[in-house]
Image: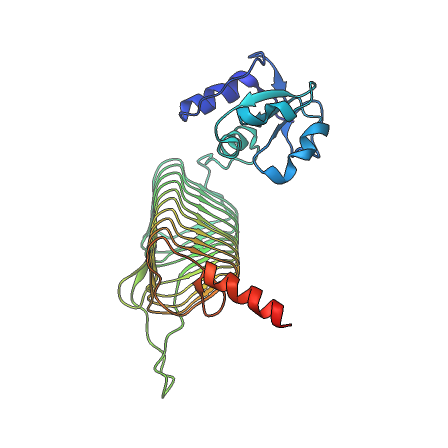
Amino acid sequence: MKKIKYIEIKNLLEENSLEIKSEISNDEIFLNIKTISNSSIDDLSFFSNLKYLKDLKNIKAKACLIEDKYIEFLPKNCKPIIVKDPYLALALITNVFNEEIYKSNGVISKNSIVNSKSKIHNNVQINDFSLINENTEIFENTYIGSNSNIGPNVVIKNNVVIHDNVSISNATIMDNCIIQSGARIGGTGFGFEMQTKQKIFHRGDVLIGKDTSIGSNTTIDRAVFDTTTIGEFSNIDNLVQIAHNVIIGNFAVIAAQVGIAGSTIIGKNVTIGGQAGISGHLIIGDNVTIAAKSGVTKNILDNKIVAGFPAKDIKLWKKEIIKNSIKK
């Protein structure tokens, strides 16, 4: 079990420009992070949702990340760690407690196969039964799990983590990305001439921007001629389908089972809820939120929140739901 001192937490938050106030001793030790209802005497907890305000009265944690205006609800046994944004503080602190950090040990397994026409830089780890195909370049400090198939025509930059059973071809993966198990990146997309059903050969590639996470069993198809692009600092959940020639801006958050059809352009800071479907050849603006299970069939302007099928302004959608409920 990993033991974390309060001083480590304090230093981490201050390094990330988060103000922190507490009377806790620097040498105080925490064994885990737990929710309010499941915490115990050696744990650190957090409060960021008013839904759980009543539960604070019975919290058993040693300390709680909390805003100043809510500390009156904490019992005496739980000491406040006052921060302006408890959830952001939590996100940072989880990295300190993380015991599943994948860092390259520089060992290339004898049970893996590395093509002579590929290039492997310093301190790259390749685990058992992985295959590195021709015209592949893997940069420093990259970790590749077991049973993965990398290449051809792949560039993997520094500090990338690729888990087991991943397939990557015709793609560039930028620095600090994480590719979860079962992801398929760079394969041929779903394209053919409708009358004859003649298959369209894909010649493009995929670009995954730096510091981006791709979830398990997510598929990102190569472009027909150009580049399918996922922006920097994006988080793509499990079981997402991103078709050929899609362009997604920086800081995207896309939940599980979303499907995005070909040649759609999505702006930056976009959030897409689970099971939403987006038609092809659309333009989705910046700072857009698409609610879960929405069906997007038209372009969406910047800063809009949409829901329903066909997707429309969420306020209008709510009014329609209320009217339909009254009729019933």
